[in-house]
Length: 273
Image (cartoon, rainbow, N blue to C red; front, side, top):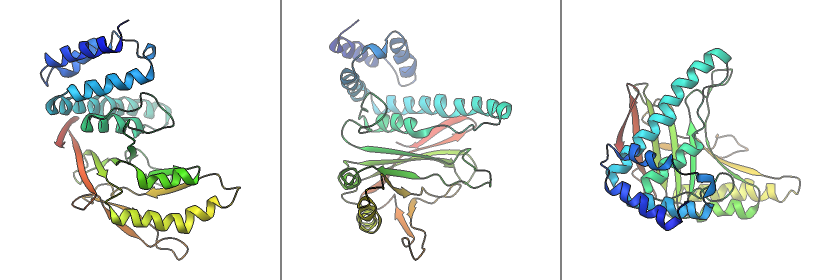
């Protein structure tokens, strides 16, 4: 087994010899030979950061297309078969796919593991929401970006994230699958920051003051499925709740669209990267 520096040199050589069109297969030729479980988590993060920083923009676009093809398009088609056979959901778990795509776009590695902790090694947070095949028995769908907290410290941490990446998988107005990712700087997005502070004062702190209350959840609703909306939503307008608020995710201070892909004839077409 190679040491971490030898692995870095190996991947540098492969990437240096690869065109954008060949990068995925060339990387696979190496990753197939590696037992990832034998590499310590800390070294995985070092290696991943090295690989990501070595990839050109064109390499990363091709890898993002391949990831969407393999993990969303092809997987969805396979699950549709089993869904008809078993009547179980064909919904894809987008949480980890979102993290892979964000790492490819930003060149920031994850933490090398699943579970608790930061989604990216720089302390950024990634959230995914999936409209596809998420209907309930009544035909309704309401995916959301959930920010769960089990303590006051975790709740307040929302205001200190280095960045928040929000991914949505839905249909565009042409009924084609669409994947979008927005980057939010909570330090600059005044509207969202102020709403979160209002939510903490009105709901978060009072609930945590009750020792029987173990967790709370700040929920943002993604842009509506099948529309060109580019804002998140919070609040239901009820007297005992919060006023309805549209939170822009594009063309505003502290938020911008960093990734968009539309699936055309089962092929991912990336238009924003």
